Length: 437
Ligand code: GUN
Ligand code: ZN
Image (cartoon, rainbow, N blue to C red; front, top):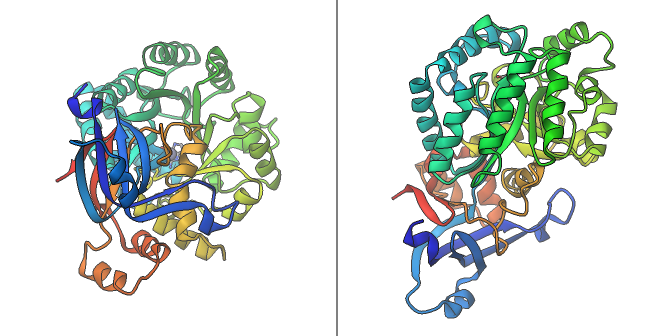
């Protein structure tokens, strides 16, 4: 443990975080904003947050004050769905989901047989997340056990709060990527024993989707989940119309796609269903009843032409929701760009996403969707001090546009429409700077 982590530090700047859900309460009361604020961190956790004038006089003498005045200090972004092995296939041309998987994704994931390659991708992936201000993510590895092993080891070295799991697939993929219900079960169990709850790491049981898992493998997935009450579950759901039709062929007894996961007992409060676009109306109620989470992945849904997410149906049903970049179907590690695309997708649906709602989904909402709201997502005392420092004025256009913005909401909206990695001046993990000057 470094000196920094053991000691107290104070961060000066404009401090912003959510204390309530802006989808449920008056937006104005959902957040705290101290234009001249201070965040005090003790042993890697939030000790206090407030106005600089008040917090600074309470500081013991000799405490280091890091000055980010003029910039926004906010909780790190939470990306609830992406694939580290797909880093090198971002921006692959011309296919929709099922063909995209066969043409680009599966061959690339096959390359993770080579542990050295997997290590180099994992290093780049974590650098890129942090450069974009993302401090927690729920990430799919490949079918190779060591791809998850490498992911967890590298995340542990960086002291990150990450959720991941070895993908399970026992059909409809190339032979070189298949496991079996038994080996998928055994390898996942070994990974769970080594990594689940080790430091800040958490394990997600990860059948890729019901297209690539037999009923037998989904049954084994439920057995894994039942082996420990606190395991996570991640998969894909109703992303693409051809995928939905294929599920009906593969599981002729099912009422619909969600029903497949339901019948195998895979829907619970630690489950995240990525995409969830082409749902049946009754599915919203079911996801809500079982307290499962959905990950909204707008850049991916646009790029691989999957469809338009229905935020209104999700929020009306009070389903837990987080944002996902879904790299490499998604085209950016930037949560700012992802929020911008979310806004545009919803415009096409005639729906709205306010800046406060968007930033909530990317922080405290995402944390809640992952049952981590007691640990991350805002700056209440005791939370883990993972945060980013945002510069609103990184390009001539942003400077010009921001000069006209008077409220925080306006600035946040401009940031999510015009912003990208350049706006993330620094990223801190448990109070230690890991990106930025
Ligand atoms: N459905 C099954 N696998 C995948 C994947 O890797 N990416 C996306 N976007 N959808 C999937
Ligand atoms: Zn995905």
